[in-house]
Image (tube, rainbow over all chains, first blue to last red; front, side):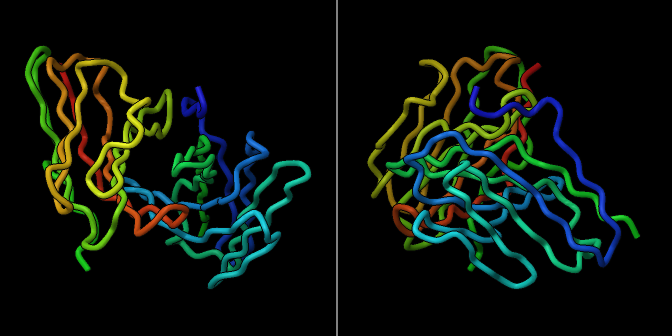
Length: 111
Length: 113
């Protein structure tokens, strides 16, 4: 399948530290990428997006980097807070509005 | 803005019963999507609509699944008959236009016993 969810990669960081979540995508024709945050019992929440004509985009405390050469996407969260604990998904638009999600990474912020 | 609204939040039913999930997209959004989330397969796109018209239903698992969008403010996903393997969280999402962020509802957790 296009995403395997049985064992989520996990990342634990100390509160206040920076975190980097990585994602590899598969389709070189994908032209639009989005990061989502999902908290327990809720739907995925939009964080930030980037189009393929860019390699970096910044938001509030978050930065997304896109490396098309190696088909790699990363989400950097600065000065992490307890509320950042969640599962983070990258998604790629493979055309015709078909948004395909990665498996997700569980981020835990330790106090 | 109330966001995407899904109902019910939880549904428990017995195998063989019909299940209907409901979604109200964000007003003004032209696209509506149905996703299913399981531990094994993650988030899977089932079907999406543009201006109330189904565009791609290739993700619908089998004929037991059907989706409708009778107007711009309402969509349903129906499973008939339901089976235990349909147990999952079903999400509805909407977006303003193509290649714009999807806004998700909080999902319907379906349990088929």
